[in-house]
Image (tube, rainbow, N blue to C red; front, side):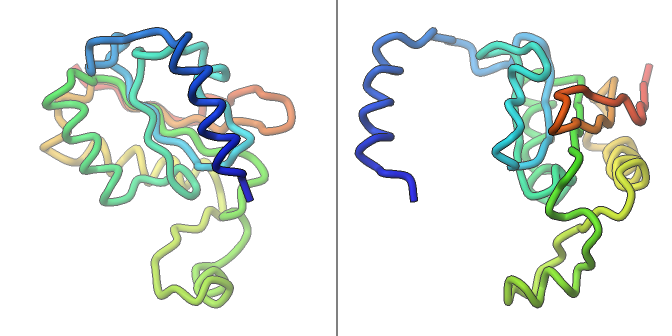
Length: 161
């Protein structure tokens, strides 16, 4: 377990030296939906800096109701027009069934397991592209991040005029 005192001490150092970004709108008009996996340093992997993108994380980097809520706000209120959905290799949701995950967790939830990254990304990208309230999204892309090499595979894209 993380020692809370260590976290607070680290924050004091961070707060005294951090870059300040005044505008809540991401300067690159970008949102990234990715997995909560601790091996993914989203900003470093994509060459991003503080203030350039919204980062939305969940188990598997899947498009869920909460992701849709966040993207509706990102696109309509905060100027986002590009979304990247980035899954990754060696994900805990890969190669297991929803039933197995329900049994392991004791939770009666839809975990959105991933049998095939290309299929899952295409499903999620097609969903985003189909929603009229997200019509302001001009580019929607699906990537797979390799946790061993750090390389990204460009899997699927949908571009709107």
